[in-house]
Length: 129
Image (cartoon, rainbow, N blue to C red; front, top):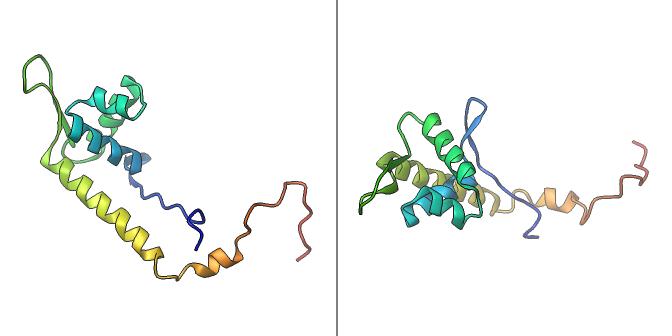
């Protein structure tokens, strides 16, 4: 099976807002590792504003906050995942693994067999039906 034939992207929606997806899960992991929202964003190549908007969206979508912050100086300042944030991240990563596992048993090989190696050019005439 070609590795590039299938890309799975698990997203959880709250209304029209993406409550959790692969990028937000990566951001939660970075916040957990670095203890800072801004440092997590920098490590992922995001602006400070974009990072904060993503955290705000997550915190607004779930019944409990996923990330909590402590302002000011000292050892306890920064950001950390709440217990709810850790649980949602764990459950989301398990859901991703389950989605990937569902495709590993060959049930979708017929799709690969029907798929071209590359798309036809837009000007290529389509065969008559």
